[in-house]
Length: 89
Picture 1 (cartoon, rainbow, N blue to C red):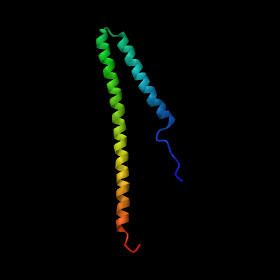
Picture 2: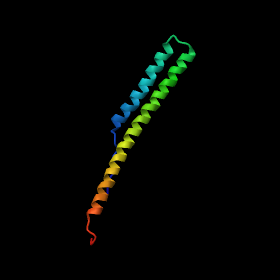
Picture 3: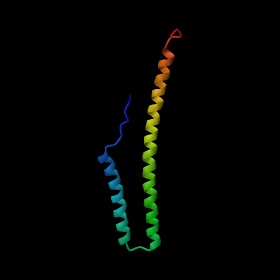
Picture 4: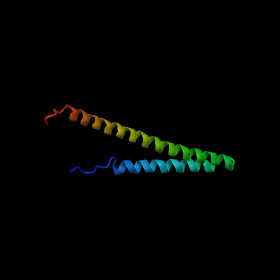
């Protein structure tokens, strides 16, 4: 019986969330204190959201592609083992 193992430690997970929240907070403070018109601030907020979503999607796609490569390699190995057996088995 194989037990499920988490990929990341709780400390790493906390650090990931903390850095994201701290980055958004610091960006927001800087934007609030900036001498810009409201429409310029809106553009910066839109870009910040776009960058955050892009970073999340890039990480997910990279991880999924790596997992898919591992699965395909395992299937190929199983296929090789199956074809190397003699017909009498």
